[in-house]
Image: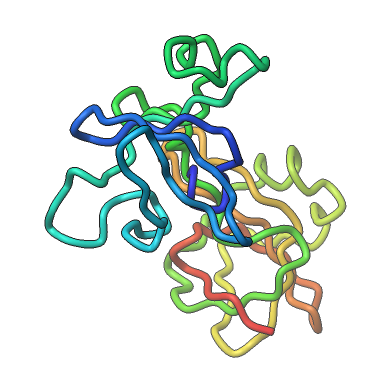
Length: 180
């Protein structure tokens, strides 16, 4: 998912009402400016939607200049579209957990008990420790060994390993919680 932190200096931003702004950096803060207005990103949530019920501040499109000529407003659409809320560009979800994150199981029923193919494709070193028909317990500490999208359900799926017993399981993202 494209967020505020993904905005780069000189990006062109189009708001819901069609108004166009350029991203600049001033005294360490990112701002939106055009020839008439300037405002801080404080008006936006992390996912580039306006914080209030006024939706005119919603960022709908971000175009990144590819050359110096794309910095002019008349040529801004020559750049690369890195985010487009209408077309889904940059809206792809990102996994909540990364490989080597420590997690605990909050819902063992979210485990895929017959998903050996996932282990074989994404974490073959866990194949011998994969527990078919088993569910992970909620009091162990696990490490994420692999992450991929489930081919049918579209959710992020994780290969996790119990750090003490070394047992391996496959579970969906909503069955996990990050721990330190």
